[in-house]
Amino acid sequence: MIYDEEFETLPREALKALQVKRLHQVLQRVYHTIGFYKKSFDASKIAPDAIGSLDDLKRIPFVTREDLRNNYPFGLFAVPMSSIVRLHASSGTSGRSSVFGYTRRDIDTWTQLTARSLISAGLTKNDIVHNAFSYGLLPGGLGLHYGIEKIGASVIPMSDGNSKRQVMLLQDFGPTALCATPSYALHLAEEGKAMGVDMATLQLRVGLFGAELWSEATRDAIENAFSIKALNIFGLSEMMGPGIASECLEGRHGMHIFEDHFIVETIHPDTGQTLPEGEEGELVFTSLTKEAFPLIRYRSGDISRLIPEPCRCGRTHVRMERVLKRSDDMLTVRGINIFPSQVEAILKDIEGVEPDYQLILDRVGALDQVELQVEVGEKYFSESGGVKELQTIEKRIVKDMKDYLSISPRVKLVAPQSLKEKGKKVIDNRAI
Image (cartoon, rainbow, N blue to C red; front, side, top):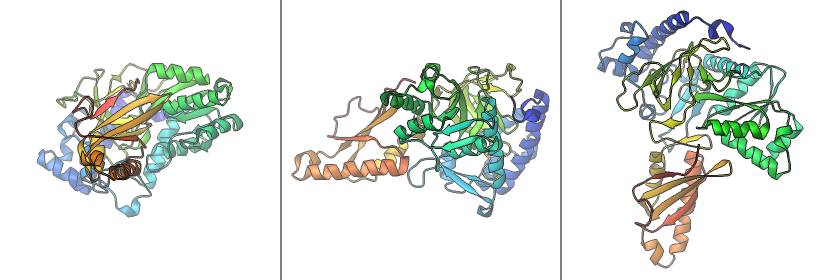
């Protein structure tokens, strides 16, 4: 079943011609409306008109996450704020998050693309969808919500958390589809089992899962726990959110990238050299139809491989393998992307904290658990009244981590030079 057959089944040559046409349009627009791109193009001695083919795209400089932060909050917007109808943002310390704007047309386009993802999973207007992706500044929950309504299905806007109630409503409302991070889906399965509920007997038949790295073993675990077909979806907040790529009902053979709206390249993560289609490398995306926040050659940091071979479903868009690793130090904790540099930015503003820390990630059951070990001054362990001061520092760290990064770690304050594996900022004990 295909949602937008005209574009999803375009012959490859016609699809490439459409990409070139839309690329010309977006390059002209960013050059004349966004100072960052004009400076970048001029410095590289590239005129938008000189990009005559998809192969010429590699002449244009990359855009990085750091570029987004340096232009915080609205420096990369291509339209005035009067045309912006919604803002989303990544987690981050003050002034360091990335902000994404959407025009009314962007919301409509986004809705169409998430509808494609849902239809490719076999959903129809007769389905009831339990949406456990987070609602809020992160775009996952709302992005899928609008697509669910677009195809005429019923949506249960649960967001994440309050798991016991979620299990109850999975029983009472009888949803036929589940949208969540894979780890939270497994957590719901564990919660249901603890409540005496056989989750495999629910009316669920399919699930769409993403927003974190997950393996085929995790897919098997989800399918066994719920007795459903588990499909992979892919999104980037910087590009739009969910709705960039998704698996079809053929399943397990890669996610179709909606190439009429995005150009995807594969590069060597160290050299930046463009790689032949089919080789593993870092994915680089260019948005072709985004009005408010177009990005040209954005380095995603995701390592994957493109699959050019035709798919039996009839869609002609190239597929990408699941993402199992990153080219940078970004971590995903319960669907939230964080960087060690963000943790450091929080800690450096707290009096009494030493420069060294360790972020220790474990998986307890299906959920990520975070412990933040932080060195503090020796005086707090020797002076009278030190216990109270340690408690004050600990509460401040917990609060700032929650406020800025939306995670709640267990904080352990330790004496200087007492951290194990000195110099290692992150210890990730999780198995994907």
